[in-house]
Length: 329
Ligand code: NDP
Image 1 (cartoon, rainbow, N blue to C red):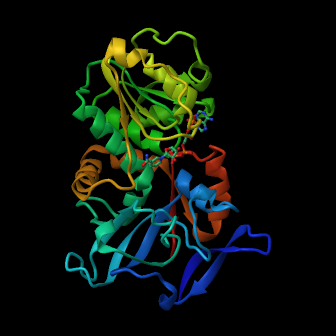
Image 2: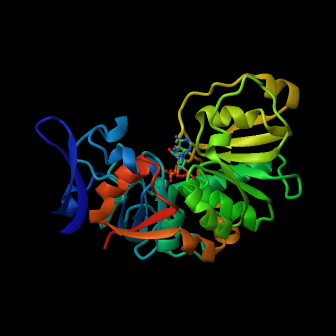
Image 3: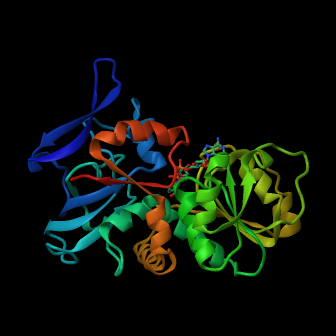
């Protein structure tokens, strides 16, 4: 028997979380069983922990947790053997497949990535899906020509999970990072991660009638979407790119095509869920080499399985700073 946070529907059809002892025979099908050590809380976890499952959870009872890191216990996949350290993000684990909010998880070997050299399971979950996606966005910007010295790189939703990791990676790589936040009290935190300057959310979350503004940003990692992304498109320097990661501020994009036509800017879609294996391995290696571990430690807020319902509600309200690391044991 092992501990799991199980979501079950009540008589009104609303899902509620309960910490339970369950047996291995209740785990879903899969070819690798992992003793989970750490999981984390992403925005999507907040949705999966909510009463209606955020439209992501299809079936109850359900174990959320869109990512985890741990040690292989049993494996029918030739690539993994007992004792191997692994990390999992994406593939809709924690949404339509049981996830990491339990001491054990059973998944497909195809969904796993070997833990990169130099990272512990705890550090991997301090990075989590949010940090992994931040790295994918940085790689996409670089692949489209971003180099240090071209001007400030904007990070929106900077004090959140994606934003914190993007800020620390970009600053460490020598970029001048401008972090957009709606929480002025996070200024010291963001500067400690390497942000050179802070931009107040109000400056960017209003629409303007002008499709083009002053050429300001050499690139952007955007966790917010909505009005803010539309504004950023009109402020990018000629030929610059934005990695569109999230929608914390809204899914609509009230923009014009003018910045694409007159400034040749690029809107790069960043998806972590179905990301091909080789690029996953590349991103995790880059995380191990380019994310300073002392900065990562500064982002960590420790938690336990029983804290998750509250943390899920907090992240949906944009009230979580940095990265929650859930010790499931
Ligand atoms: P967090 O809640 O940790 O961070 C989001 C941040 O966005 C908040 O901390 C806040 O930053 C800012 N924010 C929140 N609400 C608003 C608003 N109304 N207007 C402007 N800014 C706002 O979430 P994550 O970092 O985990 O995820 C960020 C986004 O990225 C989410 O939308 C998530 O779904 C998406 N995502 C996408 C992935 C992909 O594969 N494409 C993978 C992982 C995440 P501050 O307080 O500094 O203003």
